[in-house]
Length: 249
Image (cartoon, rainbow, N blue to C red):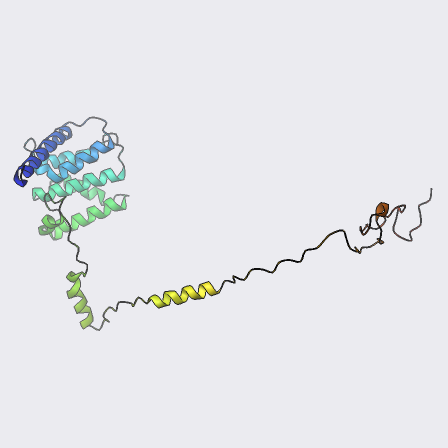
């Protein structure tokens, strides 16, 4: 089929998925898996405006009720799941064009959350909602989950800020030079610090074939064994150090 047929089929699939999850949101079971809750939040947050079974403000109220419900109904109530539901509420508020009371209270509650990520999202959303509501459509575009994000590598959007800073005396940015020779020099110095010359071969020595010197020893050891050093008093027939008197019997 052509692209128009594919787009129409995609739209039908989205509507069916939304209606399925909206019905589940209308009467949620007491226990749901984490994967189910997170899938529900993403689908409704992206395409909740397509539902014909429930108005968008009622869907927003249902998501707020889900977020404040039991942890079992939230699939365990982990922080990442709560963030997904919060994001879904913010997207639908942008689609709806105003912030229902339940959503305002829910987001205000999470500005005091112990989860810094959720707290940051809600504080930023409150700021946009109260000070620049016209930006909601740009921050939360409709059906833009598959759009490519254009990245300005030169960050030209900061040219005005940079120009103003330079005009007040700031120094322009100078890109550091990447000198490969410096890296080579450092590597050479590091390599030269190690001595690679092998050690000299140790002199071999034959033990037991030379004169061994020691206290109380002679050239002969016990039983005529040559060159064995004896400790004091251990020579054959001796019971004490040389010159010591034999003990009285």
